[in-house]
Length: 625
Image (tube, rainbow, N blue to C red):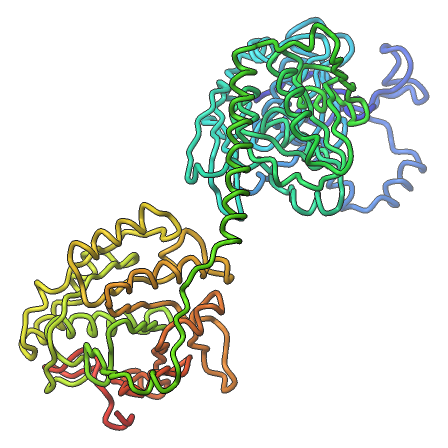
């Protein structure tokens, strides 16, 4: 954006000329005698006075250089006062706010800074002697408000701009709604103020928390919380230093949101837009929130403009919000939209019924006896005829759970593929001379693709088929490269469908961190996954899994081989082993037990890379197998 070379700009009370060359200092007196008074000589021929020479000597050369550079910068001075040129994190390099200020300057309007990321200017859409256009930086967009009544469209028309020019990204802005740390809903706002939703989980509609807002902490600290109508208003208030949250999809959908996060809060401020839907929302929401707070619920509206953003951009403070009081006896208290109000009450009634149904279910559950326990005497247990239901004698029994860990690239996937394919071929996975009964295997690999399986299993499949007593090509069924979410019923049912369809003896599934949409960082994350995986064993199948080892170091300085994440994974499987490369010999690895076996099994302690004609991993003759 360019400026007229001789345009005068008033910045914070001082006047400058936005020329590309250094301006001649103004002197007092008539123009006719400016260059000759006191000396009688033209200014160019004047010698500097002793005072000027002394001043020059006192002024550091570096300072004089900076002054000259500042005076000869680009002709658009809007870039020199209080504007950050660097982009916000996650935002485009384009700065719509900076460009808006420059465009207003280029139109000949006076602009001056009014604080951090705020400016006031003469409005370009009407004759404006006193600056009446407020400009403020929002997240990813420029915000403006004209005190003279000009609409945003009128200001943009005067500049020759389109609405998308106010956004750093011309496609608009995304607002992420999070529940328990994960994004469950994303609302996209286009420059034309059209809203689109992308829903990852429709079971909950949480409140929108702008960047930097921690609602849980605010409720615990008993801070005031503001509830404006939209996400942009919430972000504007949050940038003003208060806790503000919003619900998605406008005034008519407020009742669909989950406000339970506000339970126990102190004072709540419902900010109403100055229109009928806004007032209807404010009234219904304030009544709804009355049972959530330990303080009071207030309804306020903008003192200037239509909404919270107009109020703040116009330079108003939080204390200047106008209080709104609804009179129950006033005719205006009747619903402005009876049909909508009936829908709201029906929705609220649905949630009340659901809550009451859950309460009654809990009461019935508390009075119910499960009858799960059938105790026997020790003698009865000792008299039982117990036999092993082996898949591989001495190594794996039906319903066993094995979790293999290792560092990234250590070879654990190759080892687990070898075990699975050898079992399907009727071959002991570590003894090429011992055949076993072949089994069927179902593989759900949520990380590696079919192409990777093609490249990684050709050799071991050929050797297992040649040495075993069956062809593993038909006995192994593979789903590769599709990430699962075993916290969701549809994905759980899909795995059960495949188990029912193929009736496998072995289920090789993982890696564990790919079976949930988020990291397994605590027992609450691990418990549902463990319950689901245990449910897959109902048909007596062997459960083979792999996981990444933690980053920490053990007592001896070696990497800890226990699985990364929740400690609940440590005691769950019958067998937990980690593949740790031997530092002195990269062709060898140790099988480190990170949990003690529940029963003694004949697993090798060390394995080595196989030679030509052998399996990819072979027991080490020096390791003691």
